[in-house]
Image (cartoon, rainbow, N blue to C red):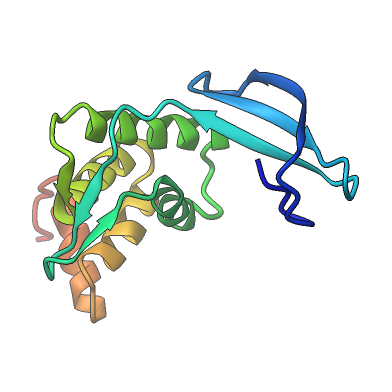
Length: 155
């Protein structure tokens, strides 16, 4: 593993243990060249996934990109980070077990929205506002009104 500080390729593993979600190995590493310490995570990857964007462009699936977008929607929400990690791992496992290596971005977005809806509705609406490209407050009104159960109209 290359040292992120000095670029040395000869780093040493000092400690290995399962990560909190037990789907990754957390490794503490040390660089003998510069003395830097850093952490890496090793995960099982069942298959290489390719995302098919709406414009037809193809790009490799990036778990970190998925994680960033989910964490942005979850900012300042009362949800434990471990629960978010479990949700992200579940999404990735679901994508890998679909049997396809090429996955449309629309499918990924729908799975993320479905997962967020079960955990936190505010995060769900935040993610949806970017995913569905809301342009005005009316877009939020319409989306949120679809979330609410049918209430009887005011007299």
